[in-house]
Each structure stands twice: as structure tokens, then as C-alpha cells.
View 1: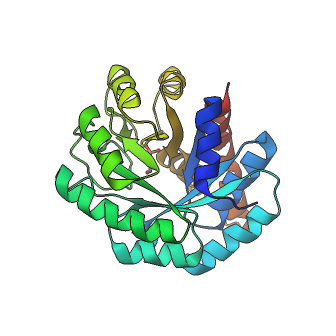
View 2: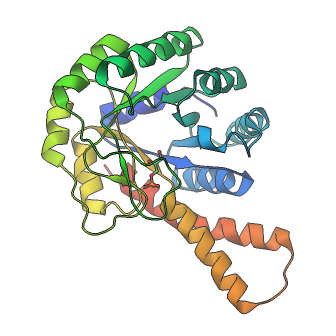
Length: 278
Ligand code: 13P
């Protein structure tokens, strides 16, 4: 069933687990995420980034996710990931997304508060919850996200930001990167503890890929309720394609797509099990 993202994350916060938000771009990524979650009995957030709007039919995609969600027992949410434009946010709300992320992380605190507040007012009128980011997540290897400058979240700014914007979830920059780490991950869990003490709403960790399992477990104990995962799933699918191409056979596209979905599922299962561990 399709549910509001806030419902999923409020429960996760109360019971101290996290929900995977898988970045999807097509039928196979969506099927893999929903089927894995149904098998594991865990809620799931299907996340489509604004950057895929030129290639994905947003309204068609939303209708497809709603139809898929109706067929499973686990709660499914549909989230707009990293949106920079008000028009994209309004489009996603009209299309039936259950939450949106406004990414004003490139602005200074005052500007970020100003723009985020406006988005929150619009989204809340439609019953849609809002995620926002302060600080900025840097980009590692193989990522398809924007290059952030890696500024970590200041707890006092986070407190003011949440109070002034009335945002529902906060993406905190604590040293994770979008994509795979180039070298040892340096994740500041002490900072996360301070952000948790300053802010009461569910916290979001961007850059799930490559983040060590023990760090994810500790971060969940310190208030992370949503973990975004993109690159590791993409790597699994692309590695399958590379091996396939090396074999130099001619198969039908339908077979390749189905096998690519199978290649993504173990990575998603790994994250779902790790994040839902109580
Ligand atoms: P990864 O690509 O590191 O998994 O991060 C995804 C993400 O945070 C999307 O918002």
C-alpha cells in the first residue's frame, strides 16, 4: 500500500530502525526495491531524483508505483529526491508523490531557510512531507549526484533551520559521500549525536553506498531513520552488464533486463536487513 513517508519514518524513529530509500529510474529498479521489501517484510521508500525528470515520465512513473504498492502488504512511499526547482516539487506533488526533498544546501543558511519554508508551506497544504538538507554531502566515486562541498551540518544551525522551516525530516551531512568512498570513510558519529540532541525530527543519511555496516548500525541508534542508497545498486546492475558483454552472446533485451533486476536484488536485501535490524 502507498502511505505517507512521514508515517513510515515516525514509526521507524519510535522503534529505532531505518528505512531504505532506493533511487529508482525504471521498471526494474522499482520492481527490485518493492519485491525485496515485500519478501523481507519491511517498509520501503521509492526515490526518484529531479535529475531523472528529463528521461522518466514522472506522472506515468507515479501511477506505476501506486499500482505496484497496492499489490504488496508492506508500506511503500514515493519520494522526490534532491529537487532544486519549485516547479519539479509541484509537479511531483500533483503526480501523487508522498514526500519531496528540497535541496537548498548550496545556499547560505538564511537563504536555505527562506526557500525551504516556502516549499514546506506548499507541500503541507497537499499533505506531502518535506525533507531538506543543511551542510552538503560530497561526491565520491561512481555517483550520479551533484558535487556537494562536504560541509558538515552544524547542530545549532540545524536546530534553527528545523524550527523556522517546519520541515519533516532533516538530511544531516556527517561525512558520508554520494557514491563509493575514495579512501577510508570519515564519518562523524559524535556530530550526529549532537545533531540528534538539537533536533527532534527523523534524520536522513545520504550516501548509503559503501558506508560500513557497523557505522550504519551506530548511526541508526543515534537517530538516522532513512538511508538513501543508489550507487551500490547501480554498480551491481552495470557489473552484470559488463560480464554479459564479455561473454559476447546475443540475448533478448527482456532477458537482460530481468537478469539485471536479479543482480540488483541481493544488494537491496543486504541494506534492508541491515537497516531493519532491531
Ligand atoms: P549513494 O549513491 O552513496 O548510495 O547515495 C544515494 C543518495 O544519497 C541519494 O540521495
